[in-house]
Length: 356
Image 1 (cartoon, helix red, strand yellow):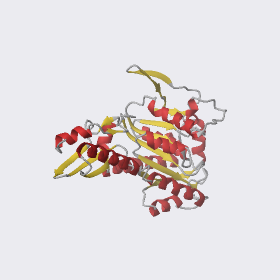
Image 2 (cartoon, helix red, strand yellow):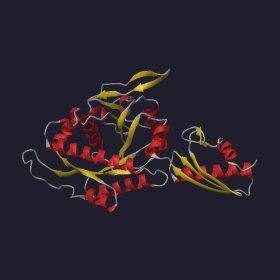
Image 3 (spheres, helix red, strand yellow):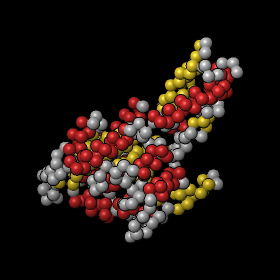
Image 4 (cartoon, one colour):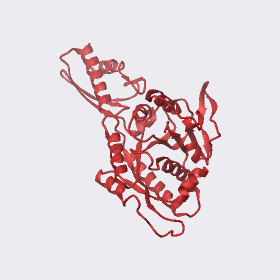
């Protein structure tokens, strides 16, 4: 076969982009084809920017091109992650969701779910369309925090395909494994089964148009986290930690996990929860029970943004237990802290998107 642009495109038309389930030519992922003598250079974009995904694509390109044009062909191919705009256009899962953000923590008990619920509430209060996936398979808490423990998702027909219709509370769409299990029963699932249950909350649900979909992850780094990044097109991750050293050590692991080449999800920033204790009768006093500015200093040390402090206040716990996130309270220090957190979060997500 003659080495020409048309013939190169014909050969590349048999190379599939694994995530998009479409060949790279039809998906407009091939650019800058240059032919000189027996040398061919080109640029190809892939959905997954991880090193292993780019390497696999490079190997597939070289194999197909040399099989068509001979082993002496010199192939120089630059494989890059797709730009954010192109990725949004090609997105098969959650195509109408603008920003998919995971909320994680290295350690349990740092208030990650409370922060997620109030961040979602603050975004909804600010006028954004918001959804929450409670992917904390072994300890789902969103049904309690949004007062929908007795609710169950309905089914909706989408072009002949039945889809799960999320529960709505305070204008926020919610799906949780807690809707599909008995509240008092332990969820005893092995990793693959838990990962599959989590995945179905994205692939088998109809989320519609959202500005933000927040994913409340279980603590630690394991099967659920790996399955998530392999299934869902994450735009970023937020790490929640308390200021104490034992929590910071795990938060550092959480940041490093998202920075791995095999995951490569940008970190939106760190949130310091339970930053200080303020008793109701002494609203101007701050007692730094777990240490001071630990997460803030960690963020600066790891060169990731710091999103803000959230105080340890009894009202936050009471509001969560009552099923009305504290951010919906009027003119309280806690509501103001969450409102400020929302503003910083939105600004940082926009910065990430613009810098991609």
